[in-house]
Amino acid sequence: MGIHTYFQSLTDLERIIRCPGRFKFQEHSVSAHSWKVVQYAKTLADIEESNGVVVDWKKLYEITSSHDYGEIFIGDIKTPVKHYSLELRAMLQQVEEGMVAHFIDEHIPEEFQHIFRSQLREGKDDSVEGKILEVADKLDQIYEAFTELQLGNTDKEFILMYRNALIKIKGIQLHCVDYFLQHILPDIVIAGSKSSIDFEQITKDALAS
Image 1 (cartoon, one colour):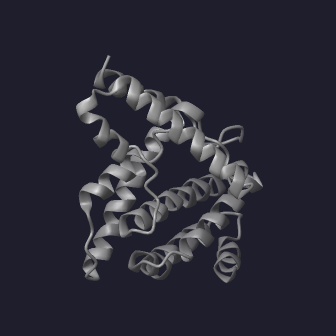
Image 2 (cartoon, rainbow, N blue to C red):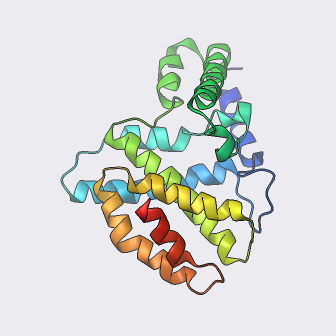
């Protein structure tokens, strides 16, 4: 059926709920997550450019908007499970990439297949754009966890999600990470002070790790 099949498949991303199996006050679909990652990445890239870094915007938009497309085939697997071991993570990535490749071979016209292989690949790498994607992806985890904890969700999984995402972000060498740590994170902590969760201590512990 050609590209129609791809367009139609995008609706499936609206039905896949992130962080499955946990009680949440607010549900987030993979589709909504992808849209937010693009928004974060735009601002992060602007910060990089303001510091003299050259950003490939076409690549950035492609990898941020499509980075979770493979979850159509395998769903959203909980982060603790996904990262239980490097071997398991590699196996899951191999399955996901294999199913995406099969989908492209089966449904995408041959003249566009090389484009789709580039756009639907795993975009997190050592390039500026790949690092920005990593930060934007983890930033959405921080905000998802932050919102649940603010609303009074007592599931410790969200504390771990907030903490682990922050630890990952602070280890990435980008100007936008420095900006986030200096200017955005303090606002998150201040906003979190109105809840029963000690965001200040959780944040300090994560930054010290």
